[in-house]
Amino acid sequence: MTNKERIIKTLLCEKTDRAPFSAWLGFAPWGETIDRWKKESGIADLDTWRYFGFEPFFHGAPVHMGPLPGFESKVLEETEEFVISQDWRGMLVRNRRDGGSMPEFMSYPIKTPVDWAKYKAERLQPRVAERLPELKQFVANMATIDAPVQLGCFPWGMFGTARDMMGAEELLVAFYDEPELVRDIMRTYTDLWLALYEEVVKQIQVDHIHIWEDMSGKQGSLISMAMIEEFMMPEYDRMAAFAARHKIPILSVDSDGMVDELVPVMMRHGVNAYMPFEVQAGNDVVAYRKQYPKLGIMGGLDKSALAKGKPEMHRELDRAEQMLALGGWVPGCDHLIPPDVSWANFTYVVEHLKKMVFQS
Image (cartoon, rainbow, N blue to C red; front, side, top):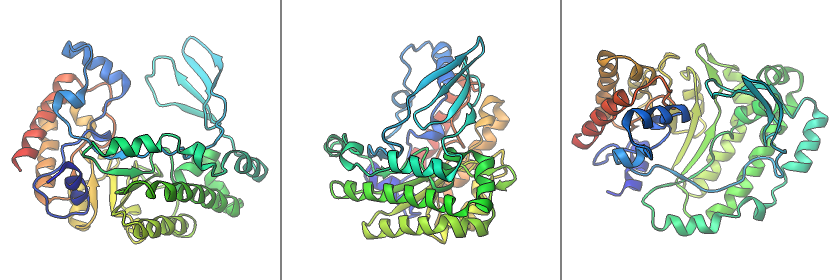
């Protein structure tokens, strides 16, 4: 069985020779983490993919899915501790100089329907040739790579993109005060993405469409299931119909937080794979596997356990053993590996997991 076949069949919950052992978000370190690991391992050019023998995962087609032209990326203010800058999406962001925290989003490009009309007219036109300049080379490269092809990536989704356009609080209020604005943001981006995807599938067989949302916290979804059905699912239905027309077998979603309500709603609208199942939010991938036997699952091992001792790490390895036995699972943690995880602990868990995968 090829690596590509194995990944696809695993996420379709079909029988395979073993689970994938792939380099993806669930094994990827923060930048600070890799700096720490280089020092602790003594390997100056440490590449964890090569070191552990990870196999390729999905390769994303190079599609420019956002504003074109983008906003000017520029620094607006600097202090000893922080840098405030505007990014290419038009968001005003404050970051710590040492990179030791998540960015703080201070301002967003869409504040009124007038802002949106201008943004849409100036920056969201298809301009297909400009948005797919590297596609020909990608198609040529994939002929030599044993990996499935993906469309869609961070930070593009229905809720996720609308939130990045407006800000979380502003978007939540807009569902009530400006519902047509919210619908138009989701519809317009979906129009753009599907137009671009149509061009890609003319040149290469696509295996996976991915939607990024990050629309939950520990308490669950930021909006009700009724709102999800009303605002988001019409666009999901369009994505699912496109996938069906072009024989794209996998439609996946990425959302942090507790996703117990999101999963069944989205599955009813064509989603058949999900990630990363944050443990600290209350997710248990074993429970999801038993409840949804046809849901492809990626991740779900507690990254925070890797910063602790052997008992905590073996708790996650026990979870992995159960998931490998149940199938339909791509091994990995529940997000990027943070810098409090030592090289020794990461190596310990990954080597044990690798042995389990190849002996399963």
